[in-house]
Length: 128
Ligand SMILES: [Zn+2]
Image (tube, rainbow, N blue to C red):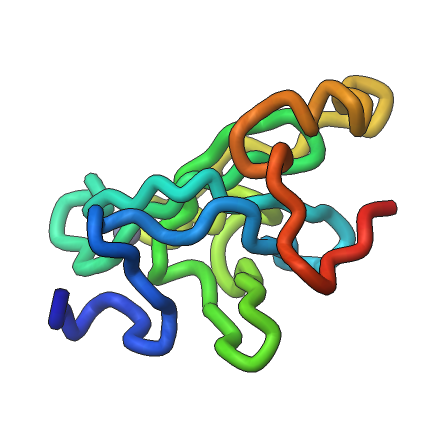
């Protein structure tokens, strides 16, 4: 998998997926997500990026594009850097993707842990 548009420090598994359960931080850093492992070509016309599946603690499932996030190999964390707070939508103009749900609509931690992304806890990750 030698694709110049994929962040080369971000390990890709033999089946083309990424690790499940990696920590993702929203653009402001205040909302946490976890990778589900899925990895797909971005579907925006002309965009060279890649989607990764992210289950946010808001309960929302999104596919932020690599043009709108960065992977930090030293912490193995992903940070949204462009577009909306959790959507990282950068190619299209407004609206900047779905905004986060209000906190009273978020699922409980137990509910989150039943699903992909949150059912695994990588070493060194503290759960609030
Ligand atoms: Zn894209």
